[in-house]
Length: 125
Image (cartoon, rainbow, N blue to C red; front, side, top):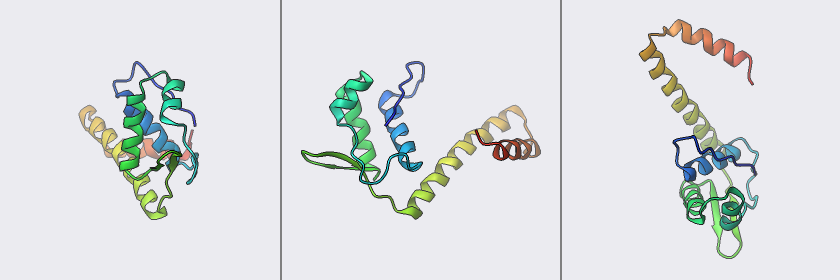
């Protein structure tokens, strides 16, 4: 599991950790049943507070991405394929909503947006 913390990002560190773990679960880089680093180990590796990593893990557990077993650790939770697909679509919709708001502010037409999407979608990075 690889997590990069950005000090220049205004997003809180616990949220950066949470989002990166979520992304790795949703992209199947982290598999169901896979053991995650302990809260203390992750905090040490990232050089952040244990409280910060605990908050990330608590949020992930509350949202159903991981489950914890007392004395054993935290594991990637089994994901319902339909629910996982819906979560992926929601993530895309949220990102597109930001792009649409930006387009409105800048006066970019829907045709220009379609052209951009066609170009970007045809050439994934």
